[in-house]
Image 1 (cartoon, rainbow, N blue to C red):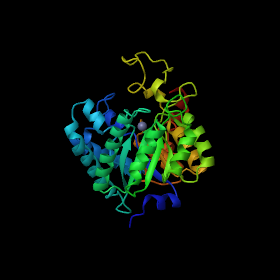
Image 2 (image 1 turned 90 degrees about the horizontal axis):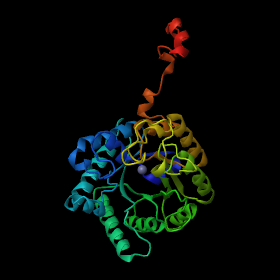
Image 3 (image 1 turned 60 degrees about the vertical axis):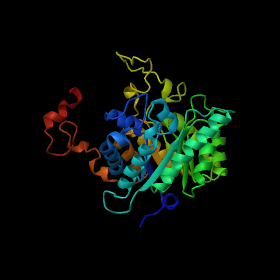
Image 4 (image 1 turned 120 degrees about the horizontal axis):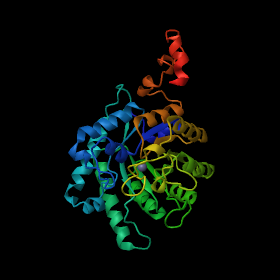
Length: 352
Ligand SMILES: [Zn+2]
């Protein structure tokens, strides 16, 4: 028995891990900056392990790692011939993990994925037709490999998001559309953030929301406004970094934490963001606030580790396999409070 996406959302929270570019890069299988997901072909076992770790942390959706695995990016790196094999390999790995849940119970949902093309240009028919072709072939491969649902994500042009939705909807599969407005706090083609989400709902997206670029602090205000006007299910997948009103996205986030060795390329994004992480309680707080607002599709994007996914899942009231390993400070050698902790060590704790 496997419930589909909308049925699950009608019944409660659905967790979706994203942000694989960052996590795979940290695990040593992908070049930062270039950001091409060759891992599905070069180290399929590493990608499968990543999906399994997120599954263990509570992700209900196994999103195929095809982010940036599109024709334009493959052209940039001169590997266009590997485009279809890369997509199919990523989809097959996601399917394998989704079909084999840890507890042997209800399978996860496998999601096909398309995202910001980075060539979409306002008023340029040629670039828009190219994007149409890129999206169409990726969606076709996803359907072919047995996707349960489709995710279109990280769009910062409203019209590109509408185009993605149009192509995704032709399949009849449930469609999740999440946008990622840049620091101007408006879509690049001048459409308002909430207005874009409303339009996506009008055009038939099943789930509408935001992902990536923004941390909890600079995403939440728009989710609150959108929840007031959207009737459909909503999605919230921030990055786990401390973005601010002055720097609403992680692209220009300064490190004001006493950094002694800045990144050679002059910005913290994407390789020196580590000191700017939110802590787990902050991501948990975000998850709870979003869930209390009535946002049932929850996750974390670039920067997400399995720990963040577990925190969000638990914030929505779920117990997941990784909950077994939630912190147990009561047994700590200095800060614990169980009777067997030595009294002299407890007393030393504040001076440690
Ligand atoms: Zn992301």
